[in-house]
Length: 249
Image (cartoon, rainbow, N blue to C red; front, side, top):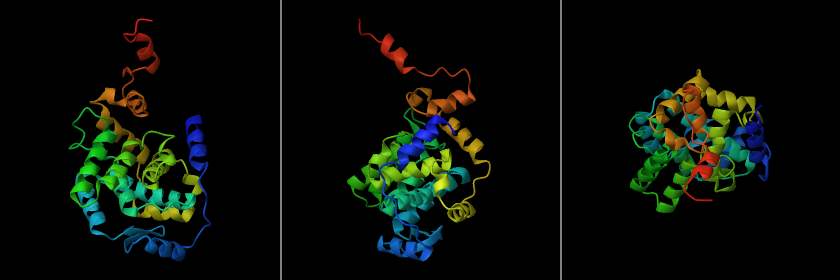
């Protein structure tokens, strides 16, 4: 395991209370207290049966291919599972919105700007939520969860709806926290949303969504992706920028 993944796994584990393992019946009861009637129950997780969740699902299903759609659903499910381990109780509608929109900025329609793809995704989510009746505070919370999902070491100290988008992404993409989940839960999530050749395909999707805006990757893990696909990619260097700027000393 790389030092980066080891550090992130340790950081994610520190400071969060754990809760006893529950069976599926107990978990369903807990979810019902969080205002959920289920259209789906995957790994004991009831996906909220609300108009907003239906509309989000339909919107993202139309905008994304199977790769990103299934990944986004897994991010929600893994985020909830990691939240259970940490004793967190997110607003499931907001967590669903953050998970489902988090990679929208990689898609052909939404990747046309020079902004970071995370910001394109976050802007689209905030606009959607405001248009569908959520207040600005909720929309801003989802915006922040999406915008920070590739910025390690910060989201886990913020609200559950922010922290658990990143937790879900880290589990599905980096494998952080995967071994903390039961084999049964993992199998249920993957049965509902498979990940064929996911590692190679998600890297290609990242590259496709960012290669036209390389400067947006400065200071982020996204620069690693561009360098992987294009060895001639000249990434901006933080130290060089400091030493070479216009201050005279």
